[in-house]
Length: 443
Image (tube, rainbow, N blue to C red):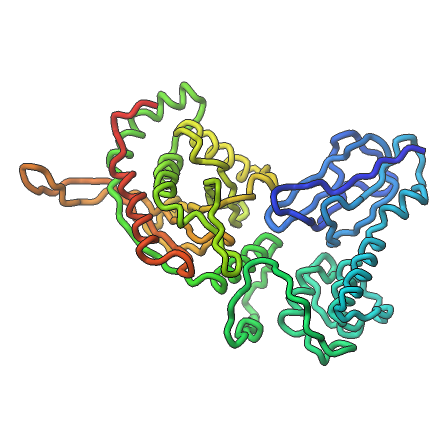
């Protein structure tokens, strides 16, 4: 009997797990090589995973809404027509045994744990959810009170973590919570009196004429990420107005020839990116991350570009090593990532590793904004709409009023590590590079 184990592949930097969102094949179905088998979702992007073999799907090890770790066996495919999995493959692959091992390891480290009794309500709880409950000492009776946001009301990992953060106290568990061994994870939130744990969202009662719209998965993730960022980083925003008349005229002059030669449209975005990269080189203090009390100076300049999706949600694909690209390279990268975003073709790697983010609020006619920092970065720049305005022009022969193309730059930064001087000088330097753009430049 020949069976192929289908494992959850690595899907980008720092991605360690994924949620099974939809099986595209059922047990007993035949499948071709590279045919989509299952849809999975990380905390950033959804992916279809292709089959690594041709044959028959004979076993699935994860149900919809369960979380698998990178490297876990998620399915078995028979390549010789057999329909039963071998005992060896099942025993080696069964994720519940991996969970049990993790629980045992946790218990050996001294963390309180309780063995969950069976559910009396008949509700389904995934092995991951049960392991979290056991590690936290949460009883089955309490677990059954957790509100699930997964498919068919299933409790997910996110639900459990939120429940623990907002309501799982010692009175809900079988044993009092013992002090946990301190483990350094992501940057801690310094809350002083612990006010974050006491924050409760308002309960809003819908009226008879109101419509209730459930947030989709991506909107929930965005909401969580934005709330986290505003709590982690004290935001400050500096504004500068830039005269981009030279850029406007230059692009108008070269865009047709560039499109004919390169097969690409040159927009303003890559031109702005070029200026931002130059300013980051001048002020590398904005290209950092914070971990606890440590400042991590990034060795690469990876520019994220906030992009609106057709669904109305937001995603941030990343231009890796943007400082190594010329203007043509930046143009091609911007266009490629924008097209992939519009067609839902972004991969996990496309949205990983950003060190600084740009958001073009001018696309929607906005002249400025106060963007929220994309953690774990420490700064983000909003580019406003380009407007034709009257302006005072200084010349050797005196000042006069002229028509100029201008735009506002809004720079939000983390005041823990970026002071007003650095944040302000950086955005002013971006404006200087834009205003000094050579309108006789060849491309």
